[in-house]
Length: 126
Image 1: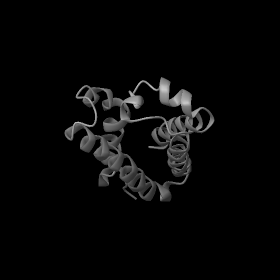
Image 2: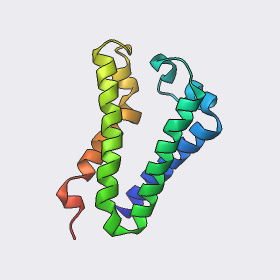
Image 3: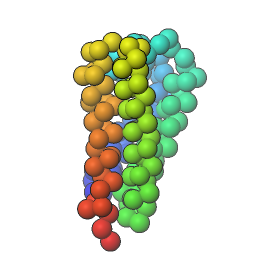
């Protein structure tokens, strides 16, 4: 669990850094079809970058402090889960093209599923 949390935390921090330092580069070059979601809003991309930074820091802390893991994993699951539900809502309402079911799979849906699995009691035994 420790290594996995470090990997996930550092990945979130890398994404956050990209969003904060180069929001336009992130918007245009992330292989997730971000321009399909609407026009670039630099402030909004940086706002979300702050959320990814908070999640990344929390995951890295939880990697080293086992007693923090359950709460951090639950909170991170809410973040990724709500993010995934927003994409499902946009897809089912036709606000995103149908190919986004696959486009969003690696960066939106799989993280939400992974964190939901990490909420299972077997990963939080004392």
